[in-house]
Length: 268
Image (cartoon, rainbow, N blue to C red; front, top):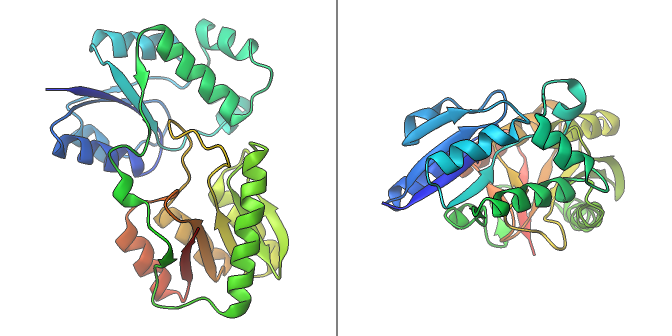
């Protein structure tokens, strides 16, 4: 049986990937690298380990011990942990980080890909087994966006692509074609809450892939937590990039949106 390693962060994406991989006949070795990884993952994966955030030597040792030829990295692991003290980098991780020109997301993730490659371990396209989670262009919800919302969606998606090109984040919150909040180190949900508060509701959330998105890491995704943050702050619509954004627990996402009058569109 072929084996795939799953380096797992927070959220449902690692669970979705593990379930899909097992359904295709792969053995899954899951390694949780962040606090709060979904407990269901341990039940689905064939083998399950936990590694402290920043313990790069131990992570690589487990992958080699299990003879895993390739891994994928899925789930939320924010750089905030580097500054909060949650992460305790080992000597190898400290050396890796010290050699980087900056700590932008792509810079760090590419360095990790190279660290795996140096041990003869490949890193998979994150979407390879879960591409059905990426909707094609169209409206996902019962409610269609209004003309004003459509204009904000198009503007928001354009601006989200711009910040993605700078490797800052993937999400913006807009209202009346003004940017209220830009995602940075705090993550998508905090960005939504901040933008919603500043706009006093009625805001549009836009999420896009980076112009040169590396599919091995940081592919944009939304899920029920995204919708909960929108509901809390009175957001009225969500726009994602069609064919490039993963929608986790799509049925629950659409139900939450429909029950709260939120429109969701996937635009090209």
